[in-house]
Image 1 (cartoon, helix red, strand yellow):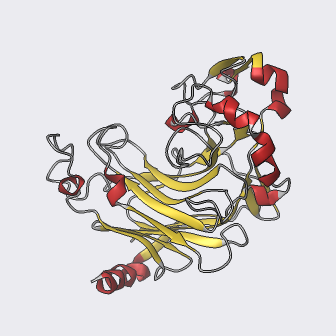
Image 2: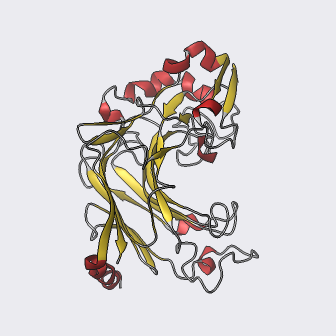
Image 3: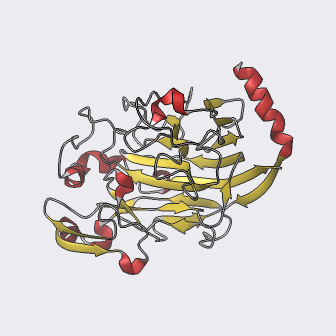
Length: 340
């Protein structure tokens, strides 16, 4: 059945028309790629803040780099820890949720200790069905969280996760011995559900581990095939499937209990039947269970000072952060195709 489905989807390849390509052979085109500028931490109280700075997002020799750095290098260690402030309003702050545009440090609650980048094509490039490929090398460094993903342009059905999310690639910058998968492993996930507390992602998630080598050693293609009935992700070649989901009539598969179906019967593939745009970023840490609180991470599940605990443990993780470009998410090219 899987073979037949793949054959059906791949047979449509001749009907793909290129709509967008960026090979990053010039400076980063900020008319195409918009930067998030916020300390909101992705809703997970992550330890990075995102900014538009060529220290964190830059091109070099035909490669785009998204490189996390240390906030203390920008504002000083003392102000980051106690008695300092960071105001992003004048920088064009894009998200004030979770105190995203302005924060002050007081010794316990510190300013996000990592400075990073998230770039997106919300206002420029989107797709509904088709094919997307990103050739990238993943970063090394404990607690880094690189991702290539899609979000709905208009939130047609409501706020997250009602309108869906397509995670083509998420990975961890930890080494190969990290028990939850280091940079030799990546995962693909669909997020969908009637509200924040009901998310069927666990049923639409798969991981892929390289048989040899790591995703941080060399470049690999992270791909998406998407039509009106199926979403497939893959590594390097469409035959090398990571995630394969039939998106028709998802709601019953969620087993959400006595919760109303938010998607109309006239849209059987909802919420994955609308325009989505591309995002690429490197986050760090946070309070989600992407890095489970099992004693391996240097902050707990209940702490009120997670960023401080993370920073105080820098003697453990900082030596794993390369000082060259291997510490960055490196992107060779992005290609988007529509069904035509």
